[in-house]
Length: 279
Ligand SMILES: [Mg+2]
Image (cartoon, rainbow, N blue to C red; front, side, top):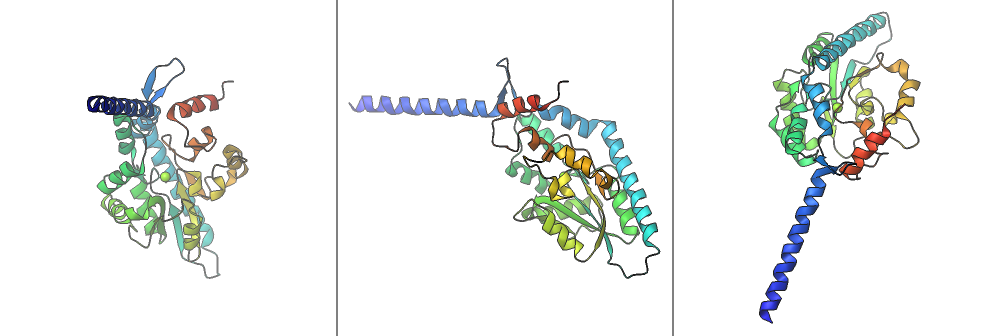
């Protein structure tokens, strides 16, 4: 009887560990239409290769920061004749994929066949290894020389403030201090943090790779088509908002999943394909 009991226990244990393994396998791969299995970070390969290695991406960053300088100069020229006392001027910029390059983190996800999670992301931030994006440091010093302050508003967690500050400082950014870096505490909505700057400063330019870096109204919402809302406010882009390219991740991805990130990786891939225009 005792013997039988042990056999049953071993069998149950073996069965459960086998199923756990199977579950992990399913979690870590995408099953395609023809039943083949691919890594769930496969879609990041082209996006990360483009972002990290293409000279075109590099050119776009230089081009966009050069353009931002022109816009800034133009705004300062117009303000010269204003007699009324004005608030000090500032610009607001996002950090990740706007001034710092985190593509090595994505490359690691690809190598490990896994996707983003806050633990590995925090580890990457704590390494303080992110390089400045092309033209970003030069632009930041141009801004400083014009007597304009820079506020970095990012959805990195406040727990990463010290590492973020050091990373920005190490690669040469000015205003890398606690007063000018506003990270995420409770909400990813940046409105309150933007408002806290606007209270004391005249913010003349916003830089970001995600439309929510400019205005929370661009957040993905079922009733709102993000492309339509950009068209509606097209006059603001290049005037007040300076946008950078990020093919690796962003609010845009949510639209493909109808806002639901909790679906499986297999389902996500299917929805990405279904989402595309075929005609
Ligand atoms: Mg960003």
